[in-house]
Structure formats: C-alpha cells, structure tokens
Amino acid sequence: MGELISIDNNEGDQKWIRHYCSSHKILLVGEGDFSFAACLAKRFDTAANMIATSFDSEEFLMQNYSNARTNLEELKERGCTTLHNVNAHSMILHPLLNLKVFDRIIYNFPHAGFMFSEHDDRQIELHQELVKGFLRNAFDMLTEDGEIHITHKTTHPFSNWKLEKLAKEIGLCLLEEVEFSKWDYPGYVNKRGSGSRINNTFPVGECSTFKFVKPYFAERSESDDAELSDSTLIEIRYLELADQRKNDNNEGDQKWIRHYCSSHKILLVGEGDFSFAACLAKRFDTAANMIATSFDSEEFLMQNYSNARTNLEELKERRCTTLHNVNAHTMILHPLLNLKVFDRIIYNFPHAGFMFSEDDDRQIKLHQELVRGFLRNAFDMLTEDGEIHITHKTTHPYSNWKIEKLANEIGLRLLEEVEFSKWDYPSYVNKRGSGSRIDNTFTVGECSTFKFVKPYFAEGSESDDAELSDSTLMALRYIEVADQRKNCRFAHIRPPSAYTRHNTVSYNRRSTGMTRSCAKMLGALFSCTTCCRACSSQAAALLPIGRLHEPFQPLQFAEIF
Image (cartoon, rainbow, N blue to C red):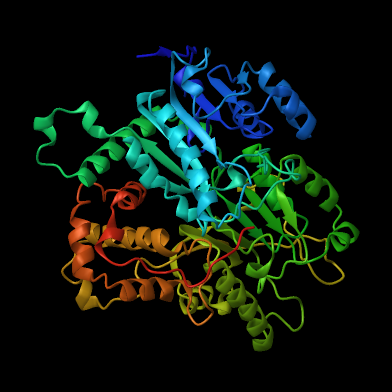
C-alpha cells in the first residue's frame, strides 16, 4: 500500500461539492487552466489533500491560459500541490506521485489533441489510447474503496470511445454514470486545451461523469461470492459505498430555506424585482445552481422597480444567471435554457396582467392560459424526480383558476399543497408587476405553494399493476427511468412535438419490448432497496437492463461542436 496523503480532518468540518469531500485525497489529471481544481479548493477552504496536475509546462500555461496564474496562486494559498509536465500514461512514475494513493482520481474531458476529425476512427483510437493509459496508471494509484472519475461527452461521436469497455479491459467496474453540469462547479471553465483556440471554452452539451471502481471480488472470499452474479456484486458494492458516503457526509453543510436546498438546480420564472431569487441566494451563499428569469427587459426593471438594481447585483456577486425577456410559454426554446433540466422550477403568483376584473371569466381564462403554457414548458425542463412549485392565492376568485386541474391536463400530479408565508423568506417583497402601481406590494392573504411532480406511471392499466406491491411499483418506475436515460437521454434531447415527455417514456418501453412482467422480475432484485426513492434510483441505475433488449435509438441528436 502506498503512502496516504495526511490531512487532519474533523468529520463535523467536512465540506462537499457534488461528489467530492474535503476529507478525500484527490488527484486531478490533465488540468487546463486549473479552474476545476481552484473551484474545489475554494469550496473546501483548504486544498492540502489535493494534487492537481497538467500535461503542459507552467510556462506554457502562463502564456496560453488567461486565468492560469490566478488559479495557480489560489491553489498555492490553499496548500494544494500543483505538478506540471505530468503524462497520464506514466504519472505513476512521477517522484511525487509514485508512493501515493488517492480516494478520487479525476480526469475531466480527456482529449488526445486535434489530429483528425472527431468522427474519424483514427482520432477515436487516439482518444481511447489516452484513456486506457490513464486508467492503467490510476488503477494502481487508487485506494481499495476509491473511485476514478472521467467526465466525458455522451453524444455521437464521443459515445464511440466506449469508456466502460476500456475500463473493463483494465479490470475496473462502472459504479454509476451521473449527469454532469458545470453549474455544480462555480468558477470552472472548461478549455479546448489544444490548437489555435486553446484558451476558448467549448459547449459541453450532454455529458456524464463515469465513476469506476475496483472489482468488489478483490475484497471478498470466493466462498462468499460463489452464488452471486457480477451485476449483483456491483449492486452490493454500490449500496455499501452509498451507505458509507451517507454516514460520512455532513448533511448540515447543505443549506435549506423552506422547500429549497443549496444543492438543488433551481429555475425561477416570472421574477419581479428579483427579491425572491436574492433571498434564496443569500441563504445559500452561492447561487451558481440558480437561473432567475423575468418577463420584462432589464431596462424596464431598472426603471420600474426601486430595488431591482440592488437585487440583480446581489445575484451577480453570488454567481446566479439572470435572464430577461423570458416568456413562460416559450422558455424551453431560450438558448440558455433549452438543454437544461432542473430539480425545482418556481413561479410565484403568476398573473396575466390587469385586463378585466379578477372575477371576470375572461380574466380567469387569461390566467389559466398563462399557467397552462408555463406548465407545458416546465414539464420538459424537470428532472424525473423534480418538482414544479406555483405559489397562488386560494380564496375566491383565485380558487377558480383550478391550478390542480390545469396541471392534471398537462400530465402532472399534485404532490402536496402547503401554506405559504412571506415570513419564511426574509427580504422577499412581492410586487403587483403591472399597471401604474407596478412597484407596489399586495396582500397575499391566504395562499399556498402547490407542488407538482411527474406521475410515476404515464401508462398502464390498473389491471397491469393490481398484483404489484407498492415497493415493486416504485422499483419498476426507477427501472423505467434508468432505461430511458441510458438509451435516449431524455433529460436533454427533446422528443418530437407529437409526443410529450411522459408519452415518450411509454413509447420507449413499447418499442424496446420491455414488458411489465419483465420489469416486475427486475424489480424483485431491488426488494431490499425500495425503502426510499434515492436508494432505489441509484440501485436501478446500476442494473444492466440495456442487455435485455435492443437499445432504443434517440429520436434526435444534438450536435455539440
């Protein structure tokens, strides 16, 4: 066993950012301008447990990356070791690395350089050789329960790299594949890293972090595993690690305000003076996971809302993305929104403007059309376990909007209705948003936050499900979602307009020939993991269900270069 990097760590002081904890011993490989390493270091406060490496020399970095000097100074101040001229194929031989082992070894967007077209088999082979050499080295630099993380694009032609196959050849197992989002890493700027545009960023498009681990069999006796299949062993391995992480993770590090957590990816729609968004941002300290939008232009906001400038500056400082001129009926088409999905989509006090009296059926119809259009868009921008929140008055005539009925028409169901109180959101000031008194507040009176979610089943008769237990139904739902994500990645690729997202899930299951009886059989494998949604979801993602039928071809592709 190699030398472990020492770090004094009080479990209560652990800090997390996505998959990474301040107590992990981390090796970063192939850094560009070191912005990813700097992002982790800032989150952890100290980077004494980190080693960040680059293939290029320090001199080359200073000449070609505009922020390299700043990031390297940041890392030095926080105690991070930075190494240059480190080749991923021979890094284990480096004098400062050859006796060390790590809990996490990270390689973001590996690339062998631009020799041929990305579609060319010769270019793909170069990329595969790079990854294979990295994995060979990383295998021997990993703790027994450590993880190797490769973040990589998943659309064609990048899917042709076959990362999982390469890892298997080295003797590694895929623990899980999780969606990657730059929003999770404030300050990280991915770089092309080669060619004349070396300092330019590139659209990451659809990409995932692939987590590889050493085979579980190495830690168990043959007699223990004689009756267990490979897939079952990997499931057991995953659940044990998940349980370990749950115990190690300091959940108090997450910050909550009412229904919203700092780890949620949040979209706010129809903001007035942006005071609600600013309230969340202040509570979370960082708003890098938030996008706040307004229907009006920025110029209009500055002219009509007394606190708009202050709130927008607050959000900018906390790294929130703010968008203007965003229509709730067409927001899914916005260039900065059309490939994103969110855990929470929030619309507080939607209102179509003062055209008629609030009691007038014509006014109510206008409000209903506004909400219906918003829900149609929000449905396709929501993660599978996400929630759409509409805060709305519940007294007459506002109760005539029939919010729940509108949501049912779109294919959503009401999770719960909870009382709304402005006292829960310090500094939030609701605005009329229209008319001569646009900057005035209004009495909210009795109102609620309606939480809508996607239904567990978009199809299937009661007779199909009559014989299934609640836990098996839950497992079946997550198997279907895992299948959906694996084969056509509906979290990002939009189906043709003839199908809504929930209809497309059904179409996927029909076209692949996956029957309920087949899914029921698979669900039985998770009888020990259906106690909670998170556990079931993670376990289902591991099951190699794609091998049971022909994979469903994506309905359309998104080019990322």
